[in-house]
Length: 255
Ligand SMILES: NC(=O)c1ccc[n+]([C@@H]2O[C@H](COP(=O)([O-])OP(=O)(O)OC[C@H]3O[C@@H](n4cnc5c(N)ncnc54)[C@H](O)[C@@H]3O)[C@@H](O)[C@H]2O)c1
Image 1 (cartoon, rainbow, N blue to C red):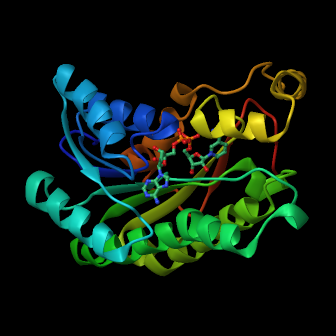
Image 2: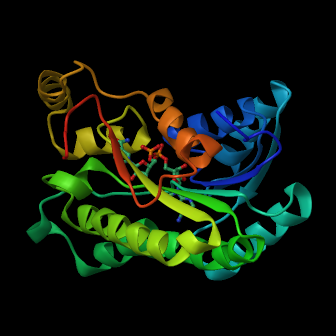
């Protein structure tokens, strides 16, 4: 991909399945990567693997729902790796149950992590991007935002909100040289998907059903996602903003 070498990239939830694969791929492209995660151990593991391969990475514990932690993590990133060129909002969380069986306290947590957390990151990073007149933001939503997903009503609402928010920010900041695009994973083999399978009650049956309904015949692996994410962050995508791309083996084919 064009012009990622030497860029400073922040990935939230960088210690997780898709986040970790994304951090490793940016590092392989020559970028400096800030790995932000609620779990410092998970962030450290990803940063360690990048160092072992000769890349540059910084592990930071950061709860994206806490504005003070967001500000502190970004200040440390800028001090050690330089101004943020690319932001990937990837951290996410879900509970899997029918909407009527959920509690308002769970909605608050789902909204805080899947929507408000990304708003904090945008709000903290955008002024610098505007000043420098360049920036790339890639938001990780979900096919649940595009077509719904049983047992994930509030999560889907957050991801749908993230899509609408991304398009609006893309419009507000296009004239500042900042692009904002969205990648929607389908079912992907990570800790989050393992919880989903358990929540559905019959994990093996669910897996079989997904495999049957995904045109490319398998659920995703974390390494299926970074290609699209890195593309949107690169100069190859400099004339693309406000777009939504599903990476889900053809499960959804939005027009
Ligand atoms: N796996 C799937 O099937 C799937 C499908 C659609 C969308 N997604 C989305 O992909 C993204 C990555 O998920 P994943 O599947 O790799 O899951 P994962 O559980 O492997 O990774 C999520 C990471 O986010 C971190 N995180 C959670 N809350 C946080 C917070 N408050 N602050 C900072 N970090 C926090 C976790 O510690 C974890 O490392 C999420 O946004 C998820 O909603 C995943």
